[in-house]
Length: 252
Ligand code: 13P
Image (cartoon, protein in one colour):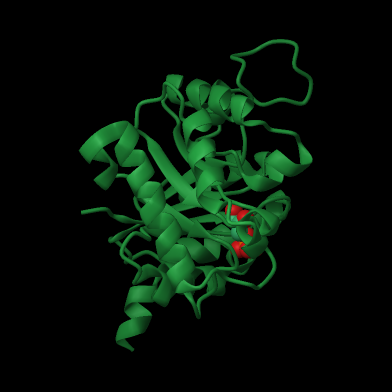
């Protein structure tokens, strides 16, 4: 019922030339993949160049890694929703823990950014997740609950994909266990159901945090894991293609 969704978050990596050579190789590698929504999120500077390469590939969409919540104006350094759609984006990542940590994106800012993105028809990959300290002190569910309450306040469910990214698993090589992942995803779906009712069954919940070609298959076997948001392993074209093609590799 929920189509698998696998996204590459390149973070602050790759020049325009590097993005172009990655995508020129990647598009033919995943040409036959029809059962996965594939999304690539390069840095702003590479969006336009990336868009012209993936334009012909029906199974790949483009995402930005952030957005500003104003429509336009005197906001030095910021990127508006129109600029993103103009560059070819259909998605934007909002609320990533690195934005929350290094750029002070609060839940309130995240909520404003999601509202603005949706107003312009951009789909949103909305990121939530607990720190190690929060997990160790038993606060995981409280954190997820309040990030959902605040981040999605007054926002309809259409066009939203949720990414659960435990902060302690990001870039650390320490993936959540299958039980931890499924437990968090089940909780997130229950929480969404308490707000949106039955339609929460349709929403895709991605796992993010040290996803690799070796662990994608078992993560995808968790009932409430509908896809992945991949950082480090998405920077190498063969590794990311292997992640996207996890089902085919399973048959080998
Ligand atoms: P890694 O895959 O490098 O752990 O990063 C995960 C992430 O933050 C994706 O948004």
